[in-house]
Amino acid sequence: MGHFTRRRLLIAVSLAVTLLATVAVSVVISRETLGDRMQLISPGMAREQVVEILGSSVLVLPKGPSGSGDLMCWVDQFVQVDVVIGSDDRVMRVGHKPSDSAYHRTMDRFFRRPQ
Image (cartoon, rainbow, N blue to C red; front, top):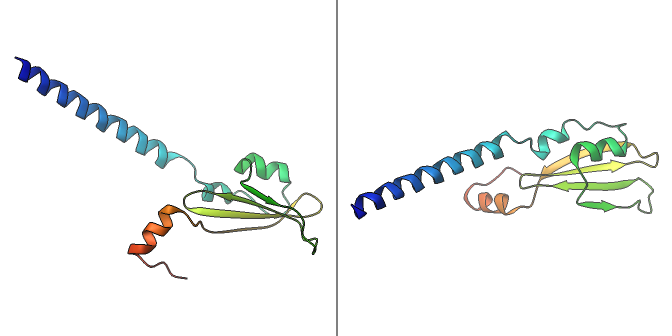
C-alpha cells in the first residue's frame, strides 16, 4: 500500500509542476515586451508620456556639450531602447538595437546574427 501511495504522490507532483510551468510560460509569452511598447513612442511626445509607457529608464545621460538632449535607455533580455529628449522635454529620436544580454550572447555562440 505504501508503494501505491508514493506513486500517486509522484504523479500529483509531476502534474502540479507541469501545470505551474505551463502557467509561467503563458504569462511570459502574453506579456508585452519592451520592443512592443517602444512602437508606441514617436518624436514629439513628452518625456512623461515616454516614462508612462516604458517605465523608469535604466540610464539617463544628461545633455552633452553639443546640447543635443538627454539620452534615456531601457534594456531587457532582447532589446535596448534609446530615446533622445530635446531641450523642450520632447522626444527627438527613438532607436533600438539587440541588447547585450546573456540570451543574445548564448544564441550568438550557436547562430551567427547578421551584422
